[in-house]
Each structure stands twice: as structure tokens, then as C-alpha cells.
Amino acid sequence: AKIHRHRWDVRYEFKSPDCYKKLTITINGKSPGPTILAQQGDTVIVEVTNSLGTENLAVHWHGIRQIGSPWSDGTEGVTQCPVVPGDTFTYRFVVDRPGTYMYHAHYGMQREAGLYGSILVSLPDGEVEPFAYDYDRSIILNDWYHKSTYEQAAGLSSVNFVWVGEPQSLLIHGRGRFNCSTVTTDQSVCNVTSPECLPYFFTAVPGKVYRLRIGSLTALSALSFQIEGHNMTVVEADGHYVEPFEVSNLFIYSGETYSVLVKADQDPSRNYWMTTSIVSRNSTTPPALAILNYYPNHPRRSPPTSPPVGPAWNDVEPRVEQSRAVKAHQGYIHTPPPKPDRTIVMLNTQNRINGRIRWSVNNVSLDFPTTPYLISMRENIKGVFDPKPTPDTLLGYNNYDIYSVANNTNATAASSIYRLKFNSTVDVILQNANTMTKNNSETHPWHLHGHDFWVLGYGIGKFDPEQDPKKYNLVNPIMKNTAPLHPHGWTALRFVANNPGVWAFHCHIESHFFMGMLTAFEEGIEKVGKLPSEIMGCGRTRGHSRP
Ligand code: C2O
Ligand code: CU
Image (tube, rainbow, N blue to C red; front, top):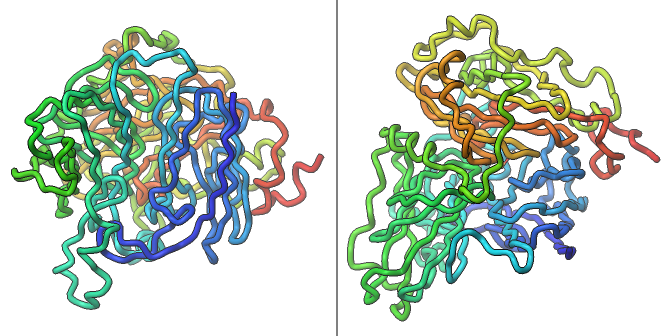
């Protein structure tokens, strides 16, 4: 196995990814940052220097399980103290599985300021995927705000709540197009001729098959991605091979990755649009456009047709159907344990707590302790988080009406999390509910650190603990690290608590996470090796884990 060493300088720079000039967090001058390429079993070492000046930093390797290296997970508040300005922190981890992964900032709402990129892990020499293609391309989809993350964070956490609103643009691999003519103040901040906002394109040779890896790291938006005149065959999800199925549009939620196969088999005398558009919210944000360029046409030549229109934003059924269609490839089935040792039903609600709007799981809206859980639990530092665990099922859950606006007067902001028996099998039933707005429920993509889970089923309505488990897919469930919870629906997940550490589990929507929509699981903390002193320094960690 090889070692890949990267040196990253992280700083703010003015960038115009959608033609509008804005302070953007860059890695070595770029956003999206450099792609990390490695082969299964390799070690990746990233020395991250925080040159943000006045802002802390932490970087998470999304989809990498960090087996034996929980302190490299990069989750501020859970696995490490933040990297302070001027410091360099070294992440070191093994990429143990092939596939498509991502990285992004995991401090405050920093991710949406531009610190993100791809991790592509190839198979060992001599092994091949269960599908054939000629070329490999990868893109990350994102949404983009013009306000600073500070302004957004302050609005979300104040008693006079200010919602972040819909994004100004969507980006396809860091490129979008804001309508500069709507800028009425300083015209110079928006420049349609900036080379930074030229649309993304990739060039296809007619007749060839392309593996297109698509990831989403949106701050808010659920997306649909489509390529004019071309169907896509889904073959990979979150690093696992999928029993192939064809789609005309791909629904993708923040934190997910997919590989699709695209055959360049259309009229080769022209180019085609690739677009991404928002679903699940009634958004005014225009779709992002990119170009599928058929060689030898000029890559900047606009296709002669109008861009394909995405699906209706409020049509939930096709989204649930596509979620259900993602199953493990028949040659790569990992059979889940037949029964859970423990079932946790997580009711997702929006509440008002101490005058602030918050998101909660079983009436607990998480506030990070100043001492990260991994450190306080491993080093037995007492009194830094609420030791009373979050309930496995909300008291009174049986009578809870998920379709009504509930007042959830018992919701609290707390630092309590879940502690799991090592090696036990845990079912998590995510149960969606109505928000504080009548007839409204949102899509929440839930992401688990340190594991892949089996996706056992999706449903609409309230989960029935007697009947619904009988319908679980225990034959060929896909394993993923992120799965959507659909409006007024439920999602059933199973995982084995076999990775010593403390692992965040959260909604991948940046503002929901910031408003407390997260929890964490501790398992096998006594099996965690000696913590590196580099992760210390905040809260009550000082002076701990010396040799
Ligand atoms: Cu990509 Cu904790 O998230
Ligand atoms: Cu959410």
C-alpha cells in the first residue's frame, strides 16, 4: 500500500464561482479543492494549515470510516478540538474501500463557504468493477449563497430568527451563473465574463461509455440531475455497487455520491445540456447548466435546444421510488444481521426552544460541549456533557401525530447522545413529522460517520413497529452512509456498532445541523487507542493524554 501526502493551505480568497464575487474558502487556491486519489488500502496524510486568519477549522472525510483512527474524522466537537488559525493539523487515515467519497469542512457552517472536494479510491491492481466504461469523470453539485456563513449563522441562532432562504445559485463542480443584471448596487461585484463562472463541461467521444461520479454537498437543496437526451445507469452509491437501473433524472441529496454510466450515443454533431435543479422546496433558484460536449464540437458551443426541465419540486413519489430502487449489486451483497439488538426511533421535529427555532431528535436539540465527546469519554473527563442519554423512543410517541403542528414543549437543547453496546446491531428508524408550518414536512438527508448502514426500507406516514419491519429488505439492501428521510415519511437503517469511537449522526443540511439536528453514537470507547495530543487544546482537554 502507498502513502499519499498532501499539504493544504486553507484561506479566504475572493472567488466568483457564479460570477458574483464573494469570500470563499479555498484549498491551495482552489474551490472545489484538489481531488484526493488513492487505491484501496492506501494511507492518506493531509497536513492542513489554517490560514483563515480569525476562524477555526476542521476537515471531515465523508464516507471514510476511520477504522482505528477515530481522531482523524475531523468533526469539531465530536472527535477533535478545532484547528486554530495559524496551526497545522495532520489527518492520517486508511482508505479501506474503493469508491466515490468527498471531504468538506466540519466546523460551524464553514462547509458552504467552499471547502469541499472529492476522494476517489480505486480498486486493487487486477480487480475490476462489475460494470464497464471507457472513461471516468467526477463532479460535485452544490448550492451557493452570497451572504457570509457568519451572517447566516447569526440569523439562525438569534431570537429574531432570520432564515437563510433559498440559495442564490446552484453550482456544477464549482461553476454556476447568477443573473448579474439583478445586482442594483455595486455592478463590479458581478461579472458575467469572469472565466471562473464559465459553465463546466466534459468532452465525450461519440460511442464511448462514461462513468460519471456525482456527489452532492449542498447546504440546503435536494437536487435532480439530468443530461439532455441521455439516460443514466446507476451503478454505485456511497461506495457500494448498485444492481444497475436506468433513470432519466437522478435525485441526489446532500452527502450522497452516485456513479452513473452515460453512453455518448446521440447525434454527435452537437452538444447537450446537463442541468441540476431543486426539488422538495418551492425554490426560485434557477437550475445550473453544464455542457456535455461531443468531440469534436467546440466545448463552449451552446446546445441548440433549451435545457431539460427538472421534475416538479413537490412530487414526492418518484423520489421515494428512486430511493427504494437503490439495491445492492447481486454479486456484492452484504447480508445484514437478521434482527437488531436495539431499536432507536428518532422523531425529527422542529421546535421553539428558549425562544429560538431548533431542530430536534426525540426532543433533544444538540448543543456541542466545549470538550469533544471522543476526548471526554476516552479520558474519562467528567461533567462536560449531559450524561442522561437521549431516549430510544420519545415518551408519548405512540400518540404523536406526525401530520399536525405540535408544540413539543418538552424539547430541550442538550449535549446528551447515545451509547451503544460494542458489536451490537442497531436499528435506527428516522421518523419525519410536520414542521412548525402547517402541511409542511422537509427532506432530511441523514449521514452517519464511522459506518455504512443498510437501508432496510422507506415509507410515507407513521412507522408501524408491528407491520413495517416485516417489509424490510433483508435480501439485498444497499449499504450507504447517507440516506434521505422523505417528507412525512420514515427511513429504516441498520448498522453494527463495531467501530470504536464516537460518531456523529446528523442531517446533512448545513442550517439544520447548525440548529441542532444531530446526535452521536459512542461504541467501544475503551478500545480506542491513545489519542494524539494534536486533537486536544479546547474545553477541559488540556493536560490529557500525555504518555
Ligand atoms: Cu458530510 Cu458530518 O458530514
Ligand atoms: Cu434536515
